Length: 139
Image (cartoon, rainbow, N blue to C red; front, side, top):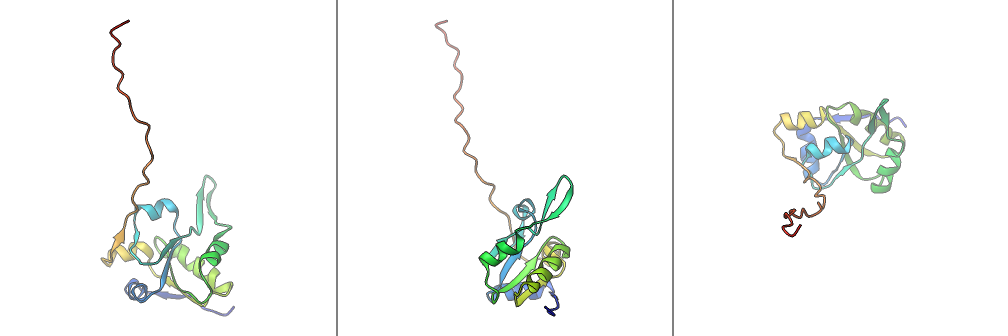
């Protein structure tokens, strides 16, 4: 498809998010949980996985986005600094998504511009109850 990737400034991205655009954060889950763009409608679908061999493209990326978003949905794609989101946006346009914008500069630019961020609550792991060992005086 001849669709060109449109990269928008984080200030424009913020306005679009407030007007109902959906935000797709394509960073890893670990990056996302450390802090992400505060948006009403946000998805975290990693574009790349970090493996011992280096970064590997998520083979399910397009399928995951397609199962959660419609081609007409208004989407903003962001990552850490703007590299992954550019590639992810191009891939989404190739498979028929129409209203996809790449957020230039990514999360780093968002933070630099003083926009609100959100941290994920660390997942609470149910810890086994620790029972104090009482010395047994009968022994």
